[in-house]
Length: 116
Image (cartoon, rainbow, N blue to C red; front, side, top):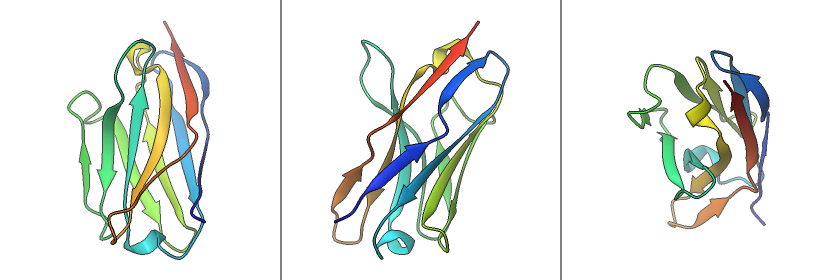
């Protein structure tokens, strides 16, 4: 069974940094596209960043230049480095995987709270 487990969330002041980590089980990881989404209270879940199996990354306009997605296939992990955090970045952040058979997997989420 595939599992995604996020960690690294917490409370940080505006302007600070956090690094989220997503640990993936299974042998599918290296061939899967990975992504981070987030959902703020009362809002729809939105895509934050994606990274292909080959390491190509894309970002939502709201986080470009501040967030960096990366992956370590040897460790079955994907990361989200978040710098210059803003109160509007407050949300639950979810790890997401799309394997080559187009199966979708979600983690349980990790809370990020940015105080002003």
